[in-house]
Amino acid sequence: MRDSRRRSLISTEPVKGAAAIRATLQGFVQMLGSIEIDTKRQVSLGDFVMNERIDTFSPPGKARYGLPVAGAFEVRNGRIVAWRDYFCMKQFTEGTGISV
Image (cartoon, rainbow, N blue to C red):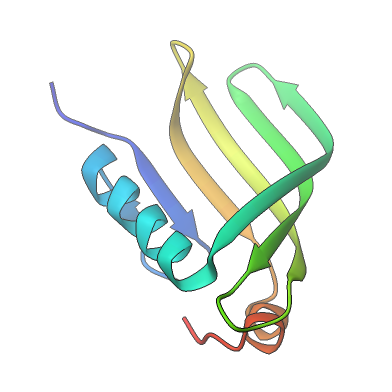
């Protein structure tokens, strides 16, 4: 069966497939240290879920930084098959000192 999962950070190319998504997330953790997610609100309609959250990063040698994020997820058979995050890239770069 074809792996149709994908993850997109808006303004970057989508990452497709479980292995590629895992590698991308591991790369973020290496750059950003720990990541804490504080979900403020979450709504769903059928197989579509959205949340408003604060992702707090602890980049090595830098101050902790909280980034407002809106996430959109498509769920099929209890699994996320598409995941899009919307945030201000300028805020991310200024807060973490990392340009993506």
